[in-house]
Amino acid sequence: MGRRAFLGLGANVGDREENLRDAIARLSAAEGVNFLRQSRVYETEPMGVVDQPRFLNMVVEVEIADEMAARDLLAVVKQIEEDVGRTKRERWGPREIDIDVLLVGEERVKEGDFEVPHPRMWERAFVMAPLAELAPEVKGPTGETADEIAERLREEQGVHAPVQL
Image (cartoon, rainbow, N blue to C red; front, side, top):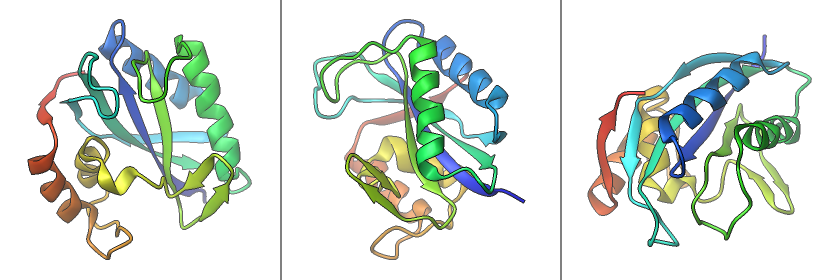
């Protein structure tokens, strides 16, 4: 039996819907990754660099092989980003596709630029709203559940009605 992992996907450049569909198809075909399910897709306001188009964001749940480390999963998603056509731009800037490793089972990783659980996920409605659909019971660092965090953040940040993918 593998381990559950959650990935955050976002896109705001080009055909946003198609970029998300393409990334999901590539995840489904990736070796050592079993695609389980996806949240709805939310249109969200950009954070950091605000002068850019709105994002489409979602979370997917996958099961990864026991021998696959979180860092291995990161390598898989970085390759998918490249294959979908992500162009390197400024931090928090526009992107064709962005895939973040949010959670990998109970693993805790802190290796330079890579940290699991994702260190800023608990502050971002565009992550917590879709995560709460798939795993409302997941607890954040303060003990609040994903569902409770999402409810609070939805009111503070620009998360719009779900869209069809």
